[in-house]
Length: 278
Image (cartoon, rainbow, N blue to C red; front, side, top):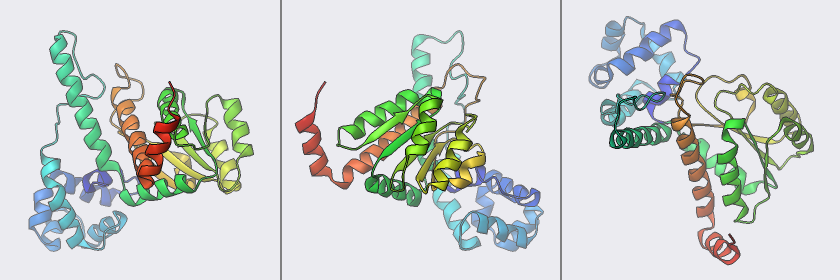
């Protein structure tokens, strides 16, 4: 995961740690150029606070922070800050302007999604799906279509995979799951009322769980095995449409499918071409 994205989405900083985290985001070049004592003075926090932040970011020390910031500084500095995820176009825009702005929205969304991917977690997700006896997707209502597209792709590779939509079916799927199965939970903000109950059922049964959500803090996230994130920059209610979150989720699911496919590329390609049907 990009270091700047990791800082923005860390929910366990204390108030003092948040001050230093904001300093990194606002003065990244200082982090690269100054030593830890100077940074402590400039950011008005203690050296111990700096090292606590470094530890929570999963880094080995201040020097690794400097390296990470330095490597990713150029992309961070040149991000398109004009994209409005909730209102990407305005009333008087021409058709061509709308198309250009939607292109910028898509581009920025894909880049932000890449920055949120922890490759170690991503690889473990692919391995878990590869070893699964049965894959079940529990999706919030707004993401059914993307879940079914992913299901179709995986079915064509010969996998046992189902999408449980309505609450009734999600409830009974949860009770019928067994160890060795993998459940993918897809939710933007984890607000589906019964989802916490389902997670607890699955946890008791030892079922592997993969949560795919935005970076909004979700109560049951601590109970899942793996957590992947899609673009979190839309307002849940005040927006024209879910342009960004949809394209982000679609991109992430496509990457999961492509990486799974690549595990047995020749075999999967042959199987898909041999059994393809409209």
